[in-house]
Image 1 (cartoon, rainbow, N blue to C red):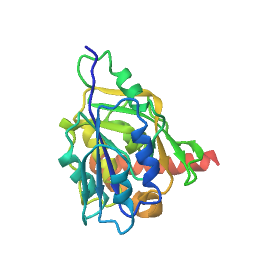
Image 2 (cartoon, rainbow, N blue to C red):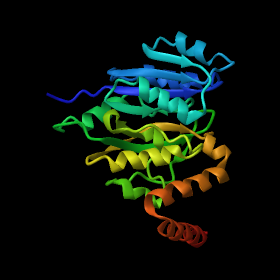
Image 3 (cartoon, rainbow, N blue to C red):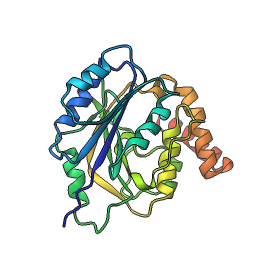
Length: 247
């Protein structure tokens, strides 16, 4: 019998009324419907929650209350999730096409059990929903926890972790806990499968982009923790040299 995994699609929001509609529409349009949708809102003052309630999606939960930041909200989503896979689809992001979830399911159809991680490619779009470019870092054919030594090769929104191995996000990281989380998930994984498709349209206005320097510093701390200080320093020297050479 073909595997029919359930997806827990988690969207974290705060005053996202201007962009949440695109995310909701992309979920509603999915041809594969074995999913639950969880909206974890930080107590928005706009119409984010109202738009979500009016969308027609069968929600498992809507939570709207103050939180300690995006990763605290994601932890609430994990705690409420009941699916086989966690899928974090931020406000403004969207599934690439109506058959995205079906393509993912078709990929695992021949598996005897569900892989620990499923991952795919990412397209970047602007606020007008226009395609800008494919994500600079391409998802590798083979992925393991050491792969992120070369940077976050897979976008967080294109990285689906099996819920039974997924930890909570570490709240000591304010901007890069997703990098830490993905590495921890991969350390606990033995089967990671690439989806040969673009799976998400990523909106270019994320928190880490708005605080780019602080995000890079925090990401350095994450990588040092997992890969060691000296190897991480060496890799970053190479990143700088590579950038200079490409110019």
